Image (cartoon, rainbow, N blue to C red; front, side, top):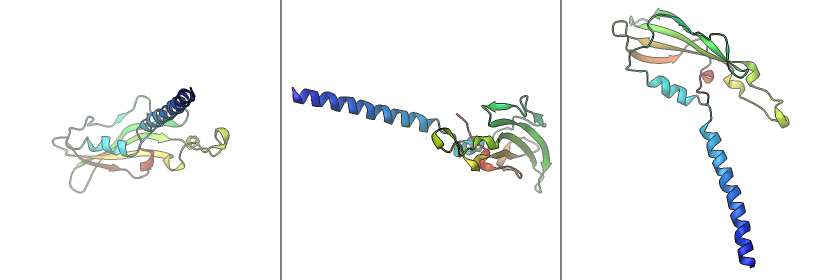
Length: 150
């Protein structure tokens, strides 16, 4: 009888353990990321640019995630680099300062101060074929602000 009671207690504790592992795995899978954003941009290389002319996002300047993420202006302008390639300048999003707080619930720090700023990138595009040659983070932006949000 003692053995059965011990097994039941162990089963209950293991149940909590597996639930905790599941929750941790689920939450870490929902994590926002700087690297996934870069991986997504890398996939554009070798493909045709989906916009040729500057284009303003329909929701530019509007909050798109709670009260801390604003839609950027979109494809803002074109320049020509020293090789004669077209350089598309994009303003994707802006992480607002209220994303970070040291006075969160139960005194916890919320958000990441280094993520605050504008996500600005550029695409180097062949002017004849419109194929994306490379991309990078543009001046005036914060690369850490460029993220995939769950």
